[in-house]
Image 1 (cartoon, rainbow, N blue to C red):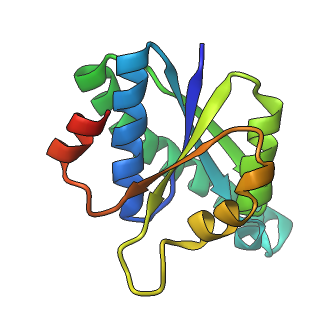
Image 2: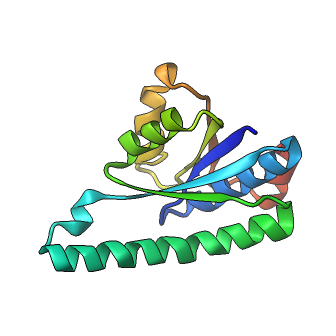
Length: 151
């Protein structure tokens, strides 16, 4: 089964990327894999404190994931899979794509601010010619109705 890989983070544009991935998966019989990357700099403390912070980060990710997963199951009939990795975002995204051959499309949300589409979109689009899968960039301002129409 082809999977749509979407990145779960704290950005506003993440929401439209999640919606798009779930709708496309529902319409094409695919699956959704949600990847959350915990940056290494969050744990540069004493070992005990770092371990507690790592566990708290994982709990936050699971809670955030469950909100999206419930919507995907209830509204789209898609049961997403959660993957949590630790490291720098772009290398971890690329590693996940290379390690899971079922991933067919990377779905990213484009930011709305004047600084640009966001660091992930900027960095990954620069290397898009050598990626093993296509990237779909979902505009952050796209309405739910428009998303439904294009999926």
